[in-house]
Length: 117
View 1 (cartoon, one colour):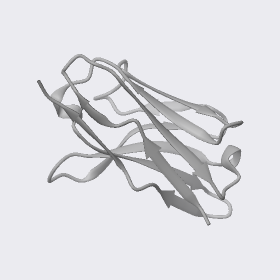
View 2 (cartoon, one colour; view 1 turned 135 degrees about the vertical axis):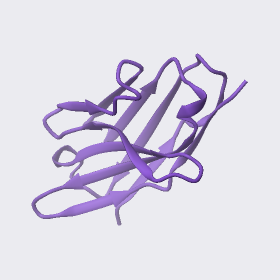
View 3 (spheres, one colour; view 1 turned 135 degrees about the horizontal axis):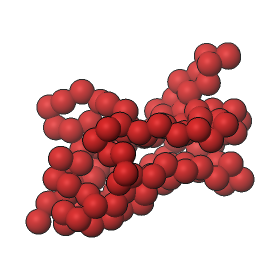
View 4 (cartoon, helix red, strand yellow; view 1 turned 30 degrees about the vertical axis):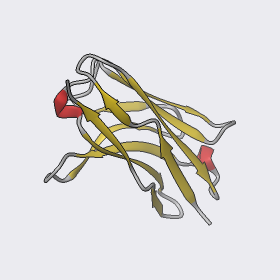
């Protein structure tokens, strides 16, 4: 079965860094666009960053210049390097795998990121 397993979350002070990882299994990873979404307490889940199967990237304005998404197709893993973290980056970060044809859409269980002094 398909599994997306996130790791790397935790508690960090403002200005600090974290690196999230999402290991995928059960899919042809290189065919999928991979995204990181985040959900702050009491708010909707929103896109933070995406990397396509062709390695094009796109970022939310709020994280552009601070976060970097990358992928290693040999390890079936997508990463999110988060630098200069701010309290407003706090939330649950979810990994997403999407393929358009045939349509497939998978989610991980999420990892908590808390930015606080």
